[in-house]
Length: 165
Image 1 (cartoon, rainbow, N blue to C red):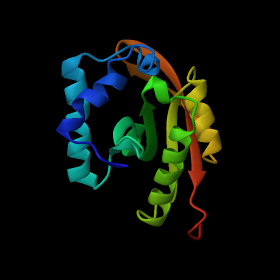
Image 2 (image 1 turned 90 degrees about the horizontal axis):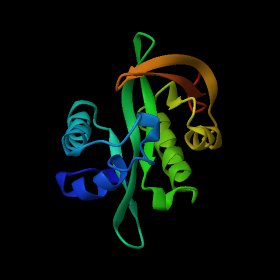
Image 3 (image 1 turned 45 degrees about the horizontal axis):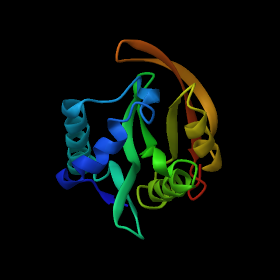
């Protein structure tokens, strides 16, 4: 994994402009929304030192997805979240789980986070399964209003076993 750059726009578009890949976001992004997403990741690197990173397939050096840590609003507070989005051609092959586990380790060992979560739409079973494989369990639920739609979400959480609680 590495930081996403402007050079990754085309690869990022394969994910964000794919209706099926973006069903949890209520549809594909247009070019302007895709650029905004990319700009937001670059701004996150500057502000926090982390964000969603490009997931690179070692064999081909191709960007196949993104996974990383972001600060997200949840019920009036900011929480550290592991997020992931991949090209459909690479779904169900273990890449999201492998990348999410690496992000969890980074959050706990480098950032010394007390806990990390994944906020997942209630209809997104595949992402829920990644969270479960990452050792997370549902802590609470809320409704997010996004793109004109009320979307129920569950927050999957795991506490840091590396530090005293």
